[in-house]
Length: 455
Image 1 (cartoon, rainbow, N blue to C red):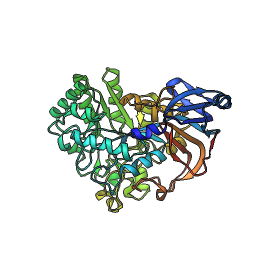
Image 2 (tube, rainbow, N blue to C red; image 1 turned 90 degrees about the vertical axis):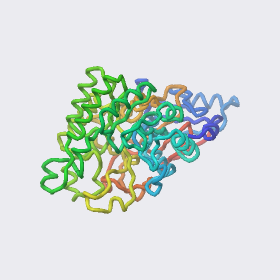
Image 3 (cartoon, helix red, strand yellow; image 1 turned 30 degrees about the vertical axis):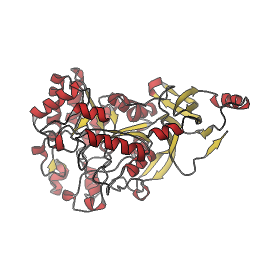
Image 4 (tube, one colour; image 1 turned 180 degrees about the vertical axis):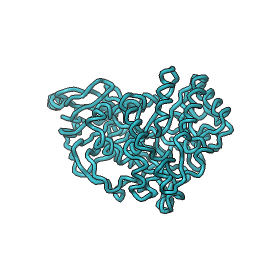
């Protein structure tokens, strides 16, 4: 968000009234009000509207915007810590404007964008440029992750101190694994010295070379080239040992395999500073679904959808806390990149506008409580990356997401704000919908039909 947009909110008050306020950071889950002022949370409690009316009668607090949140969840603004905004260089796939509009529509008030752009974000000038461009054009807060190595080539380290000063919140060569162990060791040591998390796309390139989907009976029966789960897990094993020696913060991106989950549990038990994320699509789908969909390229992603047993292991890891949070790995592509035979199509799907509905519909209540869902999508990514937000405590940023947990709708890519239409969930009926998103007290998304009043 730009400073100009923040200033716009300094004299504005917003009362979100009568919603179910869910804030795991405060252990809060009850019907009450939230008052935003000056772009921040001023108060959370019951009867805040009555107090404003009394103060208004006395000539104070004129022009308060009132949002009727009855029947809605009112939660800290959601944070997606793994997003590809394709800027610079691939704006035919996504722009800062379209990507952050998609984020806002999905309830995300902050995103961490990956550096595998063209050119990559391996230079502090590029990181500073992106940060300043986002301040002008983005609807939500954008935090850049910078490249771990120059040109994402896995050889020479990028200048971490300067990158952090320019606004980078982490380093990663996401999209490309760092194959050489000696380089990875230096990455971890250098990042630890500069207080930056290292995000790893765990993939052993010789094991995954030429693969298009999970290596297993489904791929074998179809004659599809496979990517074994060990391509992920052997790199995780290497990296947690190197991180332990370096005293670094290692974050495993888009975990997909049961063996990886076991390694993360082992590493955490040893006291290694390791965190991990999982995507909604890896929690919901498996390789059998790829075959059932006729090997539609919109079902192709990296890491691939793995076996049903892997999917169950991921769900268990979310339930027991081994997985720290959920991120979408939003990866928009032009239609030409996907309109190809499955083995030749690009990897990746979009996810910002469908994540909340897919997760709520499939897992809440039951496997995940409402509070746990908010923790996975807001509090935990904020804490893992040291970002503002993740709570509605007084003084916190006025970033708020309003969710109708009962509204049913059908996912239609034609309605996406993202330029990407590449989703395996097209036509799926889901329950739960984001109806409003506020960043710094300012509405950046409002579903048609959500009304506002003023006092």
